[in-house]
Length: 384
Image (cartoon, rainbow, N blue to C red; front, side, top):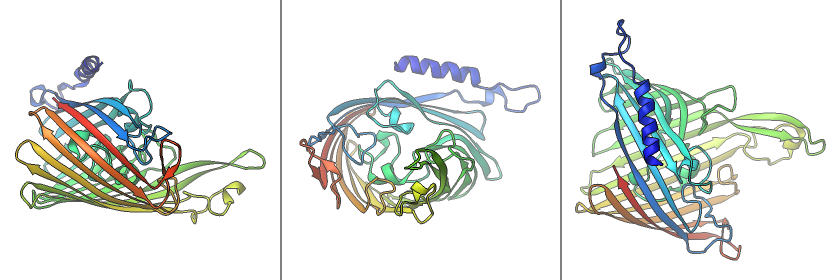
């Protein structure tokens, strides 16, 4: 399947790569770099020690399904048209693809998802733009599992951030400072679900190993709820509501052999919950607002050239249940992930994870609700 996918991608790119016209609108053919292909194949097994009757672990995304061997291929194709213009196309194939496009990991493993496809231009004046589909500016963790400190995705990745969006941003880079501002279709939406766009922006500071920090945010009409009158059964309203999110992510390597990732996030969603019954009268009010907040730290200790020890400690609060679906839900997770690099291309990791909540959001093998969950995962990643 991967060979067929790779062949299709290369054929498509070969057809799309532009050659220079006589007017010189694009670039000289010999100024472009040939596409480079990289990626990985990830095989992992996850187990919930409570053996939930539902077969799923609450609060998870890419590892939602319990007692499952999953397999995913990730392919990235990148290159440049000239010294100022680059492109990137990335695919997920297999288990993870359904989550990447906004589904879940219980769907069959034959899907292929477009994770990113964008063009990036950086002019000599420091101004530029980025347009297409690209991943969020928020958070520590990324979709690519081998680039994260741990195997599973954390609470903030799963609940506080979008994965990707389609749109464009204007950029400005000056020394260690990096700015971006633009508009996208919405939060994990290839196609918009309303007439307004979501604003996205970021301010980045890169001082090398000492400190790299990104302050990013989103604001726009996002939620769409079709309201049905409980008595008549007629559709009486469709609600759009404002969503806001602000995120601060920091990475420092000031201590030798120790990478320290830090994150803080807060957000709100209008018309997220129905507290007063007004939904049945035909509309929600902005007072039915949901909010969330969270913070986390993820250190990675490098032991020699082969061993790593990743960890994660997170807290996520969801008072109205706007993100988790459970009101007054305060969740924490502790994760420990030792890894061994067998060679330059093969990584083996194991993960122990313990989640808790003040609500009983997990279940055991008898369907009894629990306020904690313990899971383990082993992972093999081959990179190319």
